[in-house]
Image (cartoon, rainbow, N blue to C red; front, side, top):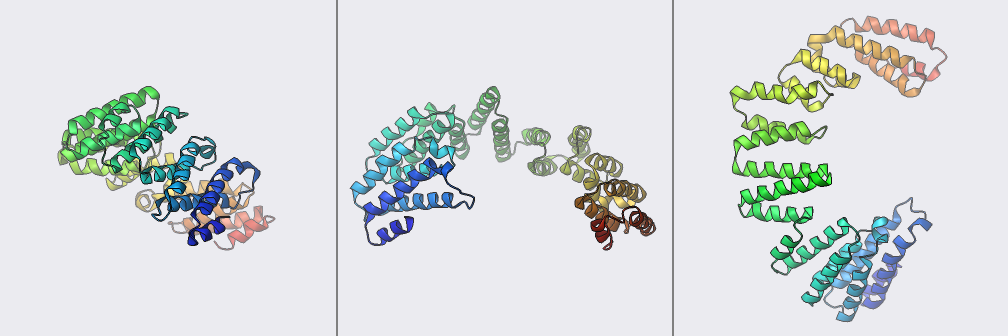
Length: 370
């Protein structure tokens, strides 16, 4: 059908092409559960139909009646929850394209207000409000009243924050961010709180407000969990912390996490500052994979201890009768050979395993490569 529609466009039979496109868009989400889509073709077909309809709407040679038909159809379809239930969110792309290409701005604004008013949930309302704002901005209309009206929607609050930031109104931008934090905390949206805290750091960096940069970056570092963004906050702290306060700052960053759980960023900080006893103890908390990761740094100071940990791990894995464990045994035996006294120990273990586990053919095959 879509091939036919594409052909019709080349023949300028736009009404026929549009009819096919709209039919495909409607049929996919409404029949999704009745079709085997293990290949993922339905999603691709839906996107192709969306692109086809958008191309018709944006085509200057298509008459207004056809564009009107697609516009009226899309503003009804965009309210159907079935599209969002089956990941067909691009129905919004068609409606937004129709809005942009429609000649009557007032009619579009009225329809966008209708979308906002009939929104089924907070997410749908947020999407509809953002669409109205984008449309108004594209037409050089004053969006301030709309932003103020819906400022309690987080996405709209972010638009206002960017306006203020770009205008250099930093105190006002921080007020918007703090209110966003307050609302998100009441709603229990931790991710949103974190996003606003990051936005505050952006303002402090622009202002070069060192005091607040340091406190905010340290706060975000501690609250980042396992996120890779922790490295970013560490680098900011390293850049702005006075040299005479750096050791105290490092201690304040790593000590709380050191007692709680293993963390790669903290381990790297320990390595960079040559805190070898603490790094070794920290890596043991992280398990054998952490010891392997930092082996090169720790080996000059804890060679015997690491070899013993590898031996213990190898012996544990040898007791497990499955391929993954056999591979692990062989991997650590090879690693142990690189240690002082490792060759002799490995040969002893090989002799032992070949005697105890000689009936494990797969294990014996793995050991041949040691």
